[in-house]
Image (cartoon, rainbow, N blue to C red; front, top):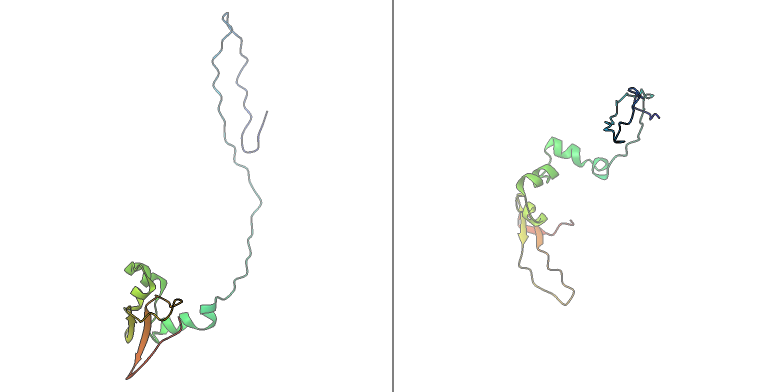
Length: 121
């Protein structure tokens, strides 16, 4: 009997004793198999953030950026907690409730001089 990856081994003949019992040890001897080289090719697709220049602007320091690594280091529970660290950004947690379908999420405001605007997130 044989299997790929193992060397066949026969170690002598065995005779049963008078009582008809025999202790036998069974083991496997590994025998590595050489395989053909494997070549993997994949096409990469540029991510949306790469297409719009996000990473380039972040590397050049043009603006304030919330990068995954920075958010993970601060261990925030909510995105709004991370947004509170951005200069000129205000997170308003107590906004008025308007009607039965009102959103209960905090409002995010950007302070631009004397004006404030709500960015699309």
